[in-house]
Image (cartoon, rainbow, N blue to C red; front, side, top):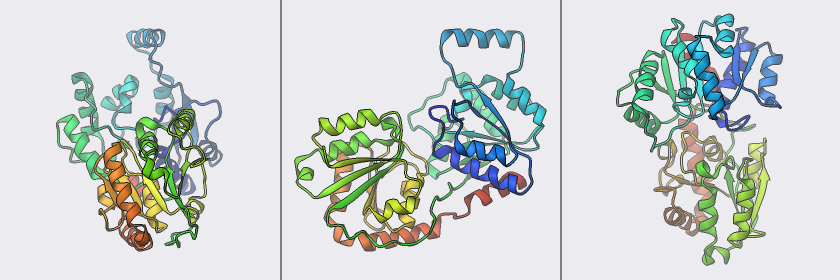
Length: 369
């Protein structure tokens, strides 16, 4: 249900699982938002035999709302529901970028309330401060309780969702995101004299908090130090971040690297991951950096406290604020002689906690629950 971009981290697990299902000779139907250029992964699934359906994005304007209301009055089904019924699935997975994306799809919610088909819900993200309307909360609770499984990425996410619904969910389950690494290996730190810090995240400032990091690094004491920040990822706030670099006087210190598919190569060229997210569930960038033997400075969001023990295998900022991120980054900087040992501990702890076969595990859950 990702609708802010053609692709993102929330789409990785379900698409990898769909590919496995197709290779195992299962029939697969996908319904995703229409983009002028469909993502390469969707094209690949189609080539493997998936039946692909594209729907219009959420349109909040008045004309669209009126048309939607008229359609409900005459009880006509959406193209999406018609296509889903025609495919006649045995199992259904509702993959949400957030926790409650389905509230923007009244047809889907109505159908889920009445269908005898077993369905699962995956909540990839969440917002601590979200407050649902009474109507939305009541309907969502019915749907979530009816689901065969409600999948979440971290313990905090489960806690927040149940609090927001004001109800315990016995069907809530933790899952893992896949790891995008060619090789699982604790890599040696780069030999560069200048410290290379990496932010690996989409350029959505309201979520990923790169503006906080730039403000931290704009302090005079940081400007006097030998470092470079490399921003990996694409997104709608690139221009804003480029202008912030100039505003904070960080020209020549910050490089925009774009999307780099080869994650191992990122960690061949960087010493430290800085994860400055305002909200997060289970950041793949963190587990990948840890598996590559890199220390991380991360804000205490989502799965971070499950993966990082402060000052042991990484450095944790209590919240996504300038003051708290600066404090954690300063601790890391002062301890940089020990980054190799910290990275080795990060690698070992990640190996013990991370499911390296997440799509296989997920497919098994969907088929056997």
